[in-house]
Image (tube, rainbow, N blue to C red; front, side, top):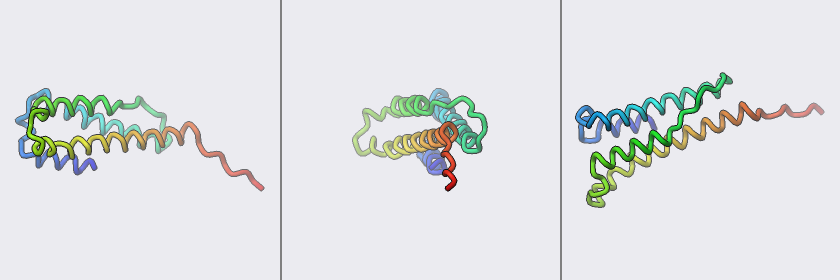
Length: 119
């Protein structure tokens, strides 16, 4: 899913380097938050001491709003606005999956399954 997200950016029809600095900052912050969240989840899965959890949703919401504002998505014709929906849905799915991985990993650390009783 992260590779698909990267391709959306590369194939978006606009050069990312031509986006305003603020939009680039939100996008890079979201990328960094994704990387940090995945590292956090990996640490949990490897029984390492959990570090600080990354709040992905806030980064995703800021990125989404910056795209809406910059590209005036709210004022586009429905067919053009719909072209943005897969990108936004993909970001939501990625955030949801990473949060699910973190929750599952954290639950396994906090509440490990008890060994089956010996008969």
